[in-house]
Image 1 (cartoon, one colour):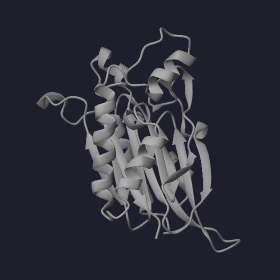
Image 2 (tube, helix red, strand yellow; image 1 turned 45 degrees about the horizontal axis):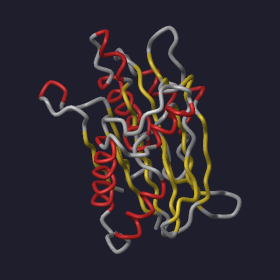
Image 3 (cartoon, helix red, strand yellow; image 1 turned 45 degrees about the vertical axis):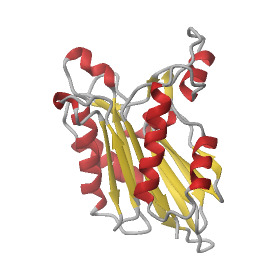
Length: 247
């Protein structure tokens, strides 16, 4: 497992950004969370919520067994323990043993517009679906009256094989890169066994697309489908990329 993070703001006051992530090799589990930026209008840093949520997720993982982590229980416990103001998306993934045919599968729990892709032989075999109430308003966990709870999380099970590559990211990645762009990176770097280097390469590419005013990005296409004013370009945001290889 490896990761790379590029916060949107580089000033000291905002250098942490609003994304958070964790890698738990012991339990074969990893996750991302993206604090919802709209809270800044109320003077609230939702990055505190996303970081506390994942800190509590790691604490809940301590009570789970490797290969049979119950992600819904983990997220529910973390949600109940998180008291910071704000709200956040979340995507948590674990590698599980399949009791029926003795194979492995990815078990994911997703809330909002963070997500993951699964690549096999440098081709995207699966991409999770974004959860949104409406355009640019993702489902979000939080301590406020109209916040979503962990019960609305989508559970995903995907069979995996040795050599598969899993790329997990916040919307800073998914709004700015299509699967085929990651396929091209994987094809060029297939001899590089350092997943952290791969995560960095993908994050840098997403960052470039985010600042390209003329790029045909997933975000610009989603904006067009939503019926808003058509406009090319990516979306500048915090970018978190996690990469894991199935062995």
